[in-house]
Length: 212
Image (cartoon, rainbow, N blue to C red; front, side):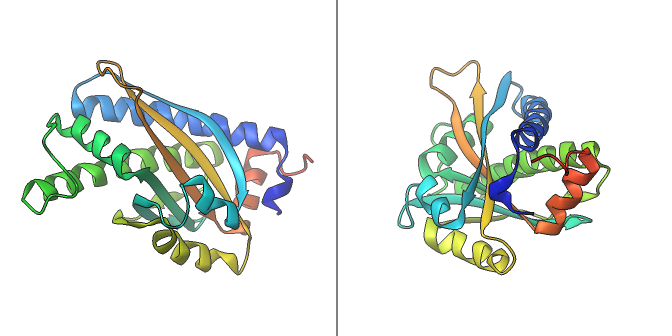
């Protein structure tokens, strides 16, 4: 299957699954931080690998990445990507501590990384759970691997692993809104790198593999 040729019906199906996953993630996040959280998936894009770096601000842009391997019947990889500022904002919301920082050398740094890993588990887990429920295909995320580095260094490894079989990735944009906050929310990107066979199986399970 050529990602570039996905139909509007297939993209709409992915977005609907993304919205369900986002709703589940918002519920889990709300329970965790004891605040009302709204989460939406405003867009899903199919992009060539050479466009991925541009979407995250360029290869030299500092980003925070949470990487998961997809285990089960539809293997692949998932990246959750945030700018350094967005990741810090998310951690502050989750810990309700405006002084905490991912970049601190103190013990607070461990708490910040733990919070970010939990956010990753919720977001990636909720999306894969929604996708799994829709398709009856077993998909489970691995433990999270958190990195803070230039986008080029972080993404090259994952892109190289799947570039042998495909040239495209699926970008699921997410927006997390704390309704009590005075800012515009936290924007992140979920980068889905499935094997071509995995997505062919997913669309077949959804009954839309024949649409052009």
